[in-house]
Image 1: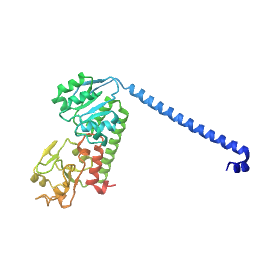
Image 2 (image 1 turned 90 degrees about the vertical axis):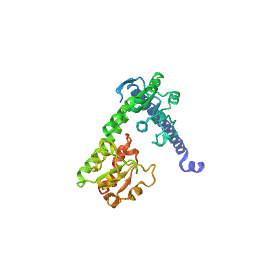
Image 3 (image 1 turned 60 degrees about the vertical axis):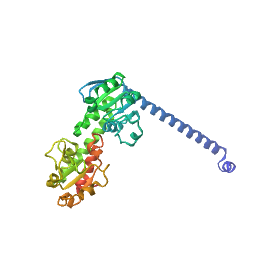
Image 4 (image 1 turned 30 degrees about the vertical axis):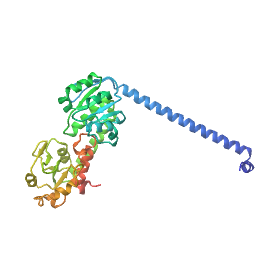
Length: 332
């Protein structure tokens, strides 16, 4: 093949071919080197930016002034919502301990479980994280354990309960401040607000006949619902729906007779993760046949975590409710 090439192109052509190969190889090597330099520069810039954020001082949800001297490298989160927020902030590789009830994202299933309301203090002290994200329940009921954590050098941050989207934004911001991930937090919060506002605007423009919605967070015989000052109430208001339990506050229990009298147009259940066919159970209840939602088979189950857990996925809950309750307006 080379002899034929030489006959056709001669020695000059062969030299030119080899020269081009060398140039191409050098170009690839130079590009790879430049890519490595760029990556190193970006990593260095990120480290410098992070270093500039610490030490940081803020007030947690127990009204305590917290000072964190340097960027945390290891985190224990003893609440599912705080774990979700941590992963959303890009801190998943730093989380070394989670609560027994943490289930999202899937990676948490392989992380050490450290208890829930009753913390496994010994295990947490063995893990010795740089920061422990605890709840106001832990703060109020296990102060001596949290004191042990702090004496061992663990930064304890109390993240309280939330009942509104604004509360959630504040908690995402606080966790981000404690971990040096404010830039990501701003992006998450901005995205949630934009999507929420878009739904509100579309609902206001398109919906004139508001539907009454009964939300069921636990099944019969002890049926609970959500009144005002809950995520579900705010979500329903966002999409121009009426909460059938709007005269109540927080989490309340009503009898079946009381619920039937409310005549909801749509029924939403949130316990399909532990009850098989919750919609079918509601549709088959004695004495409910005349309820509009049952008559028209407008009974739907939604992922409980997206409508009650104070984290970034709450906006997904709003979008899901909008599509189920007003499919003619929001169905994709």
